[in-house]
Length: 316
Image 1 (cartoon, helix red, strand yellow):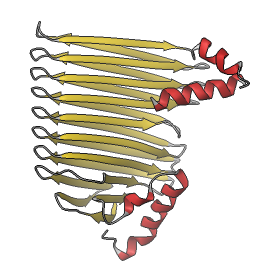
Image 2 (cartoon, one colour; image 1 turned 120 degrees about the vertical axis):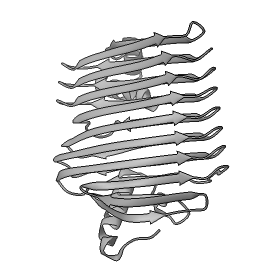
Image 3 (tube, rainbow, N blue to C red; image 1 turned 180 degrees about the horizontal axis):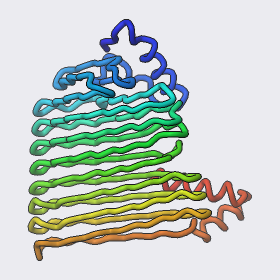
Image 4 (cartoon, one colour; image 1 turned 45 degrees about the vertical axis):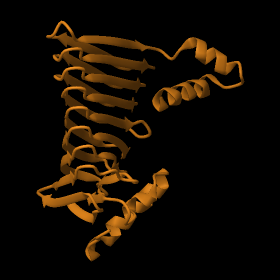
């Protein structure tokens, strides 16, 4: 890992937060391809064989190009750490990711904003997956009380490629979240988008997942789970477009409401090919009463039982 001498303290502060949050500190090791960002600075960068990461510091943020060669299969994930250690400010992060033919890689992305009180994080990722490549992208967040987050990811999956995108914000406040994930699929390509968010107090959450099944025999599964408490507001939109011959898509939205939370979910399916097939499943409601009673009969309080059910939903 290449670390500039004047940025060692910020690097060590991020490692300390990882330890406190129970995240994997080994992601900072020299065996792992990684870029470590704090504010508008690149505080650490490491490349491994088959992976080239080039970072550029821009106004109020960082832009990074990540290229994976053909036929690369990494034993460890690629680590993308975006941190902001001040109370307030603005940060923009742009990732341009290209994955070569038949490669198999996993990205672990962590956004670390533990002290934020008045902070905006603006993130854009473009991911291009070549023929036969497989990519897993997991995005997990550590937020302070005052984060406004705007995130958009655009993915192109080549013929027989596969993409799994997972977004999780369940342990800390969402406050204000605008999340959009869009995937375009070529012939025989497969995609799964999974979003899990817990909103409390007066949090505002907007989630939009979109799948364009352009290719013949392409497949997509979009799944969103939002738990909304107190006076939180959530708006979830899942869209699937069946365009290719024998394309199949499924949209699944599950929202749990407690207190005065206001939740809306909109599944939108559009077929422009009579050989395509799209389905959806959506539900909004309280915690399952039967499950609640069953757990309370085993000695848990209503609050403990509800929390256990919610944790189970967010782990699925």
